[in-house]
Length: 329
Image 1: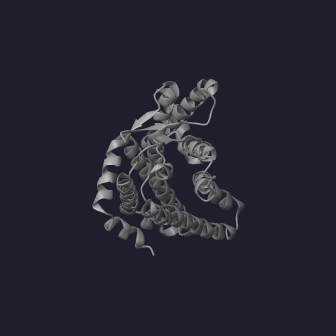
Image 2: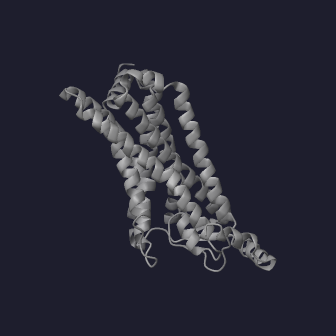
Image 3: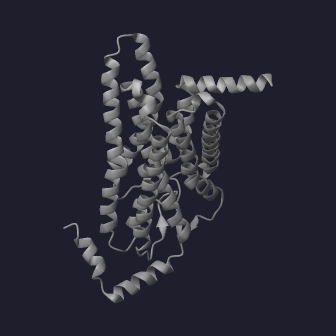
């Protein structure tokens, strides 16, 4: 049964393949309908989303700067956090500047090549976020459940390996998605009821058979979302069991303080994804999908720096030291 879509592709008639290529090449641009807001409200929402985007960029840049300047933060946990901050900046920048530009101009168009590129970077950075959060959960698991072996296990080479593997798997997944998307035909309607080139919305717009694409989405979703999420749950299950065996209240507080920030980010990231993909809206309405997409493309990356700076004692201490040094100098 799983091979049927492949047979359809391989044994399609030459005339149909030629027609598909012509239809595909004739679609030079898409029109992004944007957010479901009234025209008179665009000014208010533009100012709001511009402020959120600037807070996202500046907040995550601050995290990168603090980790770079404070030697006490040159640890595996903050090594992963620095990559997460960089990923959040680029992830938000893939969609937000185009959305803001469309809100201020009459042109809602995006070129076919630009749309395909946006899909690639959006998927790649989204998958990378998932893998980095999993690496951070593993780091917390080793630190709390095997503290005596932490330095040996979380070596510099393992940290680099985890980040490199995360980048490779995310890039490979996004490339395959993009190649499958590029082979689809788009003719007739080119209106996308979204503020960016969302893969699921593009598949609904395509006039080709999208069975292979949907099967690949399901398969990759298990690998890059479900499995990492399961690993995070297992890690924190073991952490919880270890914390319950800690006799002192001080040890319990210290263990919880090191995990609280990461758990908050995990809840934000996976909560929005589960809400969007496990409880999809009806085919007649995309408003909920667009609103949830705003949450995980713009709001979640903005909240990460606040979570790590307000809930994390190490980050607050490092930021205070940098500010005091700057004041005295």
